[in-house]
Image (spheres, rainbow, N blue to C red):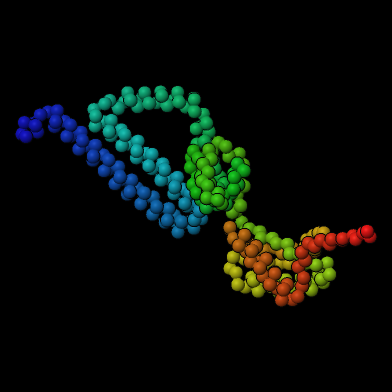
Length: 276
């Protein structure tokens, strides 16, 4: 056993293994400490500067990615040094290889540049409802290379930033909830509007998600079977669909209570009897 421990090859191997273990353990420790510091830093920034929560989450995830890549690069350099390999020539070779790859990977460079300007111009933030590349969904992450969007059916889309030619952000401002309620041609329009407005006023008192309205605007259209009364309200972000359903429910209940008819399409069939 003593001879084994005094063997220079065994000693060197044990030292290398020990240094590798220290490097790996140190990587996870520093990653946890750095992640905690980044999280607390952005929490303080959000409190002191009153930064938007979505914006803070976006920058925090980006800072986490940059920190993780930087820390991983440092660990790789340390591992190279542990094995006694010359770092300078390796870094120089990596630079040459990186330059060659850069000419062949212009799309990657375009992703990074586009992602940088998306973040700089604050076009989108985490948890925004957006339309990008004809895809609708909620932004889960904005990175320097890709942007992740969660569709309504649960699908997660990874969109390369260079393919983002236009962005429609539906979360920058109040959202519109518009409903058309049909009534019979025989009903009094003014009386119906009053009934609906009373119902909308009661609904507004109960629903905190309604920021403005709902207002009964008047006749929106005259169709083949009915007259459409248009109702408009403004809501908070992503609350418009729920408010629309509640407007429809309140309208139906109010019209039923007032005895106002909501028509349904009807067909009349004539049967001709012939003398035999």
